[in-house]
Amino acid sequence: MENELEWWGLERGYYNAGGAMAVPSGDQKPESYYVGVDVGTGSVRAALVDQRGTLVAFAEQPINQWEPQFNHHEQSSEDIWAACCVVTKKVVQGIDLNQIRGLGFDATCSLVVLDKQFRPLPVNHEGNSHQNIIMWLDHRAVSQVHRINETKHSVLQYVGGVMSVEMQAPKLLWLKENLRETCWDKAGHFFDLPDFLSWKATGVTARSLCSLVCKWTYLAEEGWDDSFWKKVGLEDLIADNYSKIGNQVLPPGASLGNGLTPEAAKDLGLPAGIAVAASLIDAHAGGLGVIGADVRGYGLACEEQPVTSRLAVICGTSSCHIGIDHMVQGHAAFPELQAKATARCQSVYAYLNSHLDLIKKAQPVGFLTVDLHVWPDFHGNRSPLADLTLKGMVTGLKLSQDLDDLAILYLATIQAIAFGTRLIIEAMEAAGHSISTLFLCGGLSKNPLFVQMHADITGMPVVLSQEVESVLVGAAILGACASGDFSSVQEAMARMSKVGKVVFPRHEDKRYYDKKYQVFLKLVEHQKEYAAIMKGD
Image (cartoon, rainbow, N blue to C red; front, side):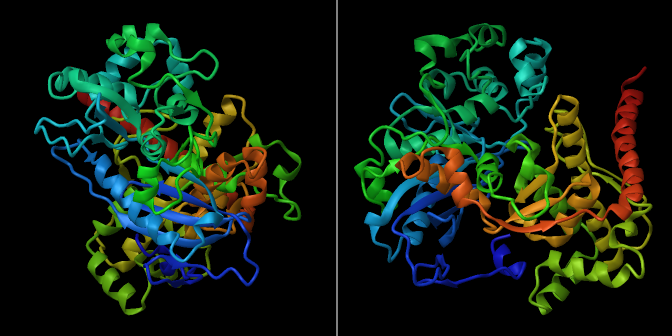
C-alpha cells in the first residue's frame, strides 16, 4: 500500500525534487526539526517533523524479504540500513542541517545476527550471510517455543503467560540447535532490529528497555533472569554479563553515546554529533505519536482519567493488512474489483467502501454480515491467546462469487479484526486495566469503515491523530527527547501529538454486534473442539 496517502484522499502536499513528499507548513518556520525513521515489514519510511509534530517531508523505500522455506522469513540488515540512508537523505533535502536536532528509530521486532566484528551471519541453512535477520513474522521455532512454554518459568507471566513463537528466545534456541557451526558459535551480537539501528547510528550497543522487556524476557527492575536462560538451554548467553544480548539498557528517548558518528552521518546525510535516541518497537512508536494528545473539548471520558485509560491500536501489517489483503485478493471477483477501482482512480478498499454503501439499502452497513462470520487468525494468534496453531475460519459462504459477495466478505473481515481488538480489551480489563478510549493509527486508520467498525464493535470512541503518520511522529518524538528540547517523553508527546478527529460508536447497533461477538467467540471454541476430535483415538 505504497500510496495510501493518495488512496484515502488525504494527500496534503507535493513531491520535492528528491521524491520525498514535502508538506507546506506556512510562512513561519520553527527553528528545530527532528528525523523519525520507521522500519516496517515491507519498507523503510522517514519523516522530517517540526516541534509541533507536523510532518514537513516524507519518503519511503521498499526493502527485500526472502522466504527460503515455508514459515522462514528473512531480511538483510545491510539492505535495511541502505534504505534508511536513502529516505533520510530525501527528507532533509533543502533543509538547513543545523536546524536538525535529533534522530529517532523504530522498527519491527526482527532478530539481527552479527559476528564478533559486527559482520552479518547467515540465519539460514543455505549459508547466505547477507540474509542475517529472522523476521518478526517467522514461525520456524515452533518446537522451541513449545519447550520454553512447558517450563512454566516465572518470566513468562510478563509476556502474557505464554510466549509467542514470534519472540526472540525461541528463535535464538532454533539458531543454536540448527545452525550451530555457521551461525551460533560465531555470533557476537544478537540485536532486536530497533537496537541494531541505534547501534549503527552511534556505535553504542546499549539496548532499549522497550524491545528487551517486550520480546526478550528482560525485567525492568530485576534485569535478566539467569535461571530462565539455563532452563531453556541458552545458558551460553549469560556469559560475559549478557554481552551478546545486551547489558546496558536505556529507556526509549534516552540520548545514546556522543550522538551520530561521522560515518553514519555521512551515510544518512545528517550532521555528525546530533542526538540519537534509544529506540522503540514500531507499534510502540505509533502509540507514542497518538496517545498523549490533548483531548480537551471533545467530551471524552479519558480527559479526566489517567493516560492508562487510553489504548493505542496500531493498524499496520501485522495486525490487519495481511488478513484483509488475503481475503480480498484471493476472491474470484478481485480482478473485476481492481479494474473498476483503477478506472475510478481509487484504492480497492475505497472502492469496496463505496460499493457497500450502494448495496446496504436501508439498514446500517454493518448488518450486511448477519450470516457471514470470520475468525481472522490466518497466521496464528499472538494476543491475547498466544496460540500459533489457530487458523482462519469463515462460516456462511454461498455459491455467488460476485463483487457484492467480495464486498461483504471484506466487511466481515474488518469486523473480525475489530472483534479481535474487543477480545484484547476484555483480557486487559480482566487483568485489572480500565480502558475508555481507543487511539488509532497506522495504514488502516485511514479507512473510515475500519475506524467506524472499531468504534461500534468495542463501544468506545476512537481518536484519530491530526498527523496520519503517527508512527513517524513517535520516532521523531524520541529524537526530540534525546536532543534535550523537551524535559520528558510526556512533554514531547503533549506538544507533538494532536487530535484530528473523534469517531463515536453508534450505540443503537450494540445488540447486533454483541450477538456477532458471541458467534466470534464460538468460532474459536469450535476450532479447538475440531482439533481435539481429529487428535483423538
